[in-house]
Structures are given as structure tokens and as C-alpha cells.
Length: 102
Image (cartoon, rainbow, N blue to C red; front, side, top):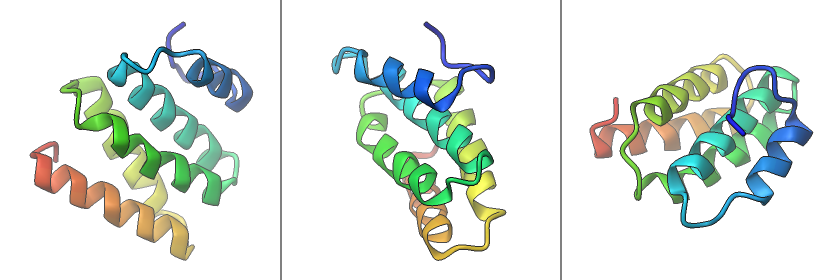
């Protein structure tokens, strides 16, 4: 299963739950895609939390697709006027700056 725009939050949660822990790239991508879906649906706090949790998987991957999704989610979070979204965006930005992903 690929993480894509047409997949709903429940679909993405199921994909993430069944993804082998050894596939860090897929786990990061699914978690960031879930985050994007949640933020767009107005579930900003959960979306921000999922985005921050994706950082646990990013150290083990180098993927242009994951990096693009990370930057996309960071941008979405920056558009939201909520402390949790700002904090998450700051953490994602800090990660990107330190890892050279930005």
C-alpha cells in the first residue's frame, strides 16, 4: 500500500499499524501523510503529534519523498494559529536544519 492523497486517516492508521518496524522510510512517510491528512481535516493537535513522532523514524532514512512530505507538513503546521502546531513546526524545522534536509 502506498501513502497517497486519497487515503483517509483510518486507512493511514491501519497501514502504519501493520508496517514492519524495520521499514523506517515507510513508517516515516505514512506517519507524515497521516499528519498531513489530520491537519487538513482540522485535527491539528493529533496531526502535530504524528508529525513529531515521525522524527523517530527519520534518522534511519534518506528519502527525497520523505523530505518533501516533511517540508509540506511543516508548511501546513505553520499556517495554523495554534501553539501545538507552531511547536511541532519548529521541531520539524530544527530537524531539517540539523540533518541538511531543508
